[in-house]
Image (cartoon, rainbow, N blue to C red; front, side, top):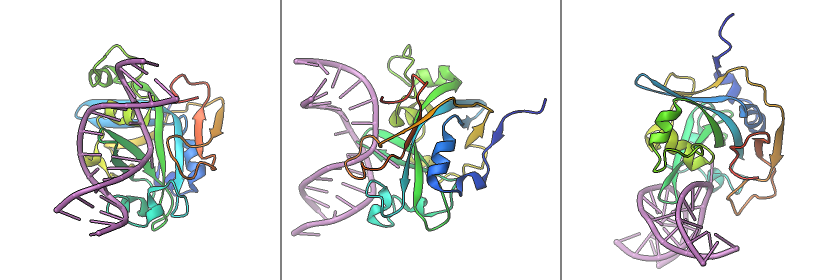
Length: 195
DNA sequence: TGTTGGATCAACT
DNA sequence: GTTGATCCAACAC
């Protein structure tokens, strides 16, 4: 049989952000570093859409920090927060429309041993159950901001995994825009960041 | 040039 | 439920 794995193409990201967010649940985040390949299956994401979404970083207009969100869909937007953590987003939609999907939680799949080594407690099974932890496990920093996700370094992949149930809720950890139900998660997964 | 607070997490009480 | 760790972008001056 032909491989069931295929890298998500540019067109996937150019669609409406809520559709992209929904469809990302169950896809695999893949990062290649040397001869290592790290991967995890996404179980939780959130959409941040346009300058009219008060929780979106683009609500303040275009800045040096958020400019990659104004670019074409299918690029990474990685920012640093709380003095300790990085968060990975996938830019969506057309150029000059700032929108992205925050990758909030995943289930480790490939090279779990490498992810473990990055933690003080390598016996933990909670390696990628939060946005800051995914970047820690994958060693993603602002160095990888603006990376083309249709390239070979960092990308999203469809491995034919079918999510049995995708649920929707309010977004987490924000003070503005809490009226919007723009969080999507696999309710059967033990790795979602919060219930 | 200085101040402030955040799309977090772990370790407390 | 609360707090400390600790950087940097945004904004006020």
